[in-house]
Amino acid sequence: MSRQSGMYIEDLSEGQAASFTKTITDADIVLFSGVSGDTNPVHLDADFAAGTMFKERIAHGMLTASLISTVLGTKLPGPGAIYLSQTLTFKAPVKIGDTVTATCTVDTIKAEKRRALIKCICTVKDEIVIAGEAVVLVPSRKS
Amino acid sequence: MSRQSGMYIEDLSEGQAASFTKTITDADIVLFSGVSGDTNPVHLDADFAAGTMFKERIAHGMLTASLISTVLGTKLPGPGAIYLSQTLTFKAPVKIGDTVTATCTVDTIKAEKRRALIKCICTVKDEIVIAGEAVVLVPSRKS
Amino acid sequence: MSRQSGMYIEDLSEGQAASFTKTITDADIVLFSGVSGDTNPVHLDADFAAGTMFKERIAHGMLTASLISTVLGTKLPGPGAIYLSQTLTFKAPVKIGDTVTATCTVDTIKAEKRRALIKCICTVKDEIVIAGEAVVLVPSRKS
Amino acid sequence: MSRQSGMYIEDLSEGQAASFTKTITDADIVLFSGVSGDTNPVHLDADFAAGTMFKERIAHGMLTASLISTVLGTKLPGPGAIYLSQTLTFKAPVKIGDTVTATCTVDTIKAEKRRALIKCICTVKDEIVIAGEAVVLVPSRKS
Image 1 (cartoon, each protein chain N blue to C red):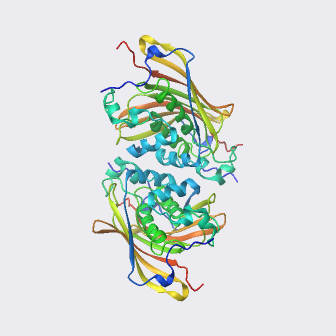
Image 2: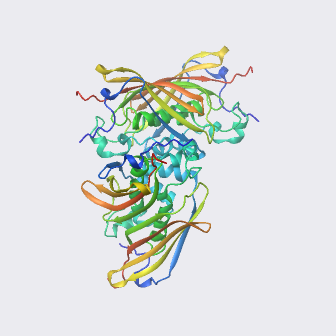
């Protein structure tokens, strides 16, 4: 009953890109705290956060990073691909109300292994807040 | 008004470890989908998931990975540390009802740079489902 | 622009009762963890909970207790009343899927002070899981 | 398989204290309303709230009180303790954006009964918004 609805490895080409954008709200932070159990005060306690280099509450880095998974899992390559690995460099904080765009760009395709290396960035306005690389296993039309 | 409540770089030692355990439920998956926008059917559509190699709905890899951030942000080193980078290798799926333990172990400390390399694994029973490494910037008592 | 929509102290009589019923689900527990920051493993970690006297994950006591506040704030006396105090005795655990009924019964009215003492119980089937008393300050038609 | 990770009764001493701090946001209020069913307009309806003595929407008293449970369940005494009772006096409203600190201080220990009486306050800046007492049953190293 498999209904492959994402892309096949044969559909991918280097430089191909897709993105997903979401405003990070306070509700996201509360919900992410519940799901992850991460109650770090830099996310939840405005007084604590005011005393840090960030000066205000910031989003969990993994919350922002989850937007990368959204692009990979719903757009490029989309459903049917298997997430093998991800690297993440956290470059700048995301504050409440920031609108984050995760953009994934196909870098290298190893068709025989059905693998693609995908460059991932998350940006707020023009600033890169997260950079990383994903490797995904992608279905082939040949198998 | 900074209230450093986590560990200082001087408090860390190689081999030091901490963990956080949480059962991954259907509610976590729904809420994580809402927060991330990741509506990949392998997480939300039981019929689709039945046709994949996983045979049933699985948790978002980044949801499981978020438990690593919980350990780093609340226990080792805890509040005050800054998350610089994370690598993640997704080794096995996490199914609804699985109880996941994220364990972080200090690997290497660069005191002069206030950085620690921390090995991270997520396990279900004795199986490693995610392995990776984090780099964190940790406050120093000297500055 | 005050729109008193709840009861006045003159509307209350001893023995008057109201109740609210809700099934406690796993989603409630995840959300309550996020809102409260309470990540006690007896609520979130099925393996930990299996080793306790409860044998399985249980709801936060304050989550169940919050249903009392629902009765007081929406039904008896309803909007306009001010919550002065609450006592709570936790008598039995609430498990995921349990349907809890909070029932509040007017015990004593001090009309001149605009105060009512209200007996509160939360039940699952016929078992009392929480018992307590609330004191509320209730608007008067005379002022 | 019990993994006692909190404190034992023998670890407690009178005057010992722990606290948890969280900024109460609009998202908390919405989510708490959903979890509890408490749709009292003083929490959700800005027009109604403007006509009350509070002049603006306030947090559910039980939401603020839940931070006490966070201290008891995660810090002092932490996982493994059983919540027997709680008294709460609501002394002042908590408004959206207020940062609340729940502080629990061991008052009396009855080692032979494995019980501790714990004084609990919630404060916003220096004002006490809730005061109360909890009784917890705490594991013993001797049993």
